Image (cartoon, rainbow, N blue to C red; front, side):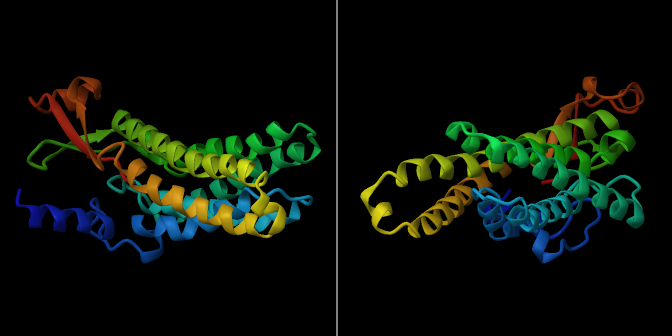
Length: 255
């Protein structure tokens, strides 16, 4: 494949959904993930005395990531609009609840290390759960698997499970690292003479660090698994194995 054609193909994957050829809304394209979520992560990780201060950042973050996961998930199976809306609403509510509730415990902790580590652990785990819940229909209904010529061989629940699992893993790496490293750097920054002279600089430092780390981690997490992923035919359902002589098939993992 010529470099120009390959580059154009990659750009098309980021703007057009490969399953239905529809344009992906601009706020939910892969390139928009960094500018939308970096500030939300920053505010979600702040140490606060009142849970009310966390409600808006947490709900905003999980609302956006839920919509992003649904829009960029596999769309080859039959899914109605009202199903996506109901599913998304439930995922947003549950993710926000499970993201906020442990922070009540954090406010009562006296151990400094636990108070710093708990928000990172919560964000990382809930981000993975968010992917699994938002795309829960894929392992249930199955997604299209194709041969190398693009011919659809059937719908596989096992491929759907693998697609969701791999995407959830990439989110753990992305959001876990983006939340953890700024906390570590900030821990050492507050001990410097510069911070003692300019206490307000912590916010600027932490936000800059979050944007920088996430900017580096977005391409890393997106490239951990190919968007068009392959799977051995022997790992799929019997009816799909009997429908083709190919040893491996392909499917859209999503983003």
